[in-house]
Image (cartoon, rainbow, N blue to C red; front, side, top):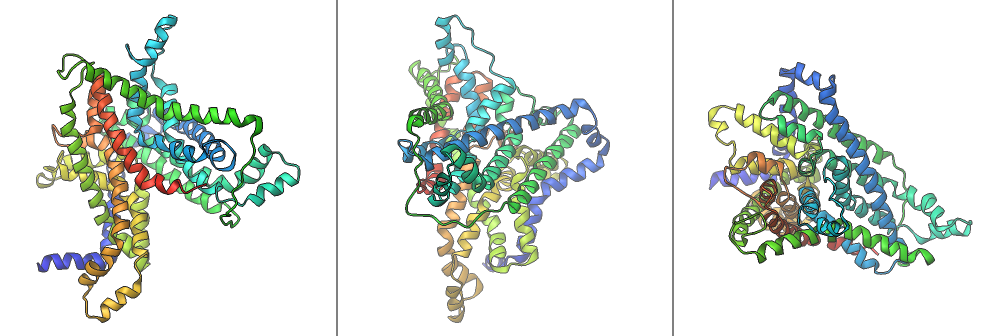
Length: 534
């Protein structure tokens, strides 16, 4: 009992624990640096030879193309849904962000399944005598990643421009500017920071993606890292550090650029501006419908088609077209269990840092908070590979945790702990200090004040933080592939393995379960607040 009280006491006096936790989040990158210093020739070669620079060049090209296209789609859709007289504006605000619920590897699988023999696209092309095109390479990866990531631009831009005063654009109209010119001269300068932030987030997502580029056979940097991890570990570590340096450089540049963005102070008006589209009203509505169809309805439709086709054919694994509903139970339970544990663990880990940054405001706490947040910039594959090589090279009593559930949870927390930081900070900041002071005057010790006064008030915010981590963990793939115990299968790895085995019905059913649960959590945690935008 005394040990428990000491642990809780450390939690509520978190300056030192915050520094330790910050160091833990920095550990994967530090480990990569140390290992590459030990093999500096290999690391130097990755920057000097064309064979190893080509994957980096392809990755950067894909990132630039996807972020540019997502910025265009997301910004245009946000403007149409919030500032024009397009029909069904509230419906668009709900459905346009929904592609967020589809992981990239499921989007890639849906594209492959659509053009597979017997797929919807293949069957539509057969009567025309057209052979299905090869679904692989840059074009396929660009298409999938653009359609699934534009909401990362749409959400911040919609939130920003929906709060712009109508008087700004009305003044431009009085000066003779048309709707298009007013958009570029008034709206875009004010939304530039949101567009930039969303675009860089898309860029980071793209360069760190593994599932889509692997399934679509695009030789990006993550695919090279994964394929070389066994035959050439030194090269895998060097490429991992290469990718980590690029990702951290993008984050640093994003922070510098967003700080330099100058925006006027605006307040939300009761009167919302509606730009009349007139003859462009129907084309704009069709364009939004086409975007939702391509990014959401078509992938889900393909998954439903293959899942229903497999269910109709029976429940015995006689062919790739048959699925077994019972086989979904274990992956679903495993996904729910590890995701819930990861969510709770992430909140417990980052809470001392959040508490120290809000209440303590010391340099050590601020540095720890920065380390936790910047850890999200490291691709999940890089973090997971660092843990793999660390566990394999550690002494026997530590190395036994390789491919165990605790190490898998650690990978999830290091990967997604940053998602819990801001909600935890908001929860801590929302607890009035006066209540803590009153409890202190009534004789409650530090531990009791935290458990009986502060924790109940923080709980809703902490549950939201855990939910965000849970949502991301459910869709995580690289860490689960590399660190999960033998025979342990989640819905993500179920989809992955079934896709590699060409069991399209099994993969579709598992994808539908994962997408459905993700959709509910995404609406509850993210989109419910976004629908307040008008």
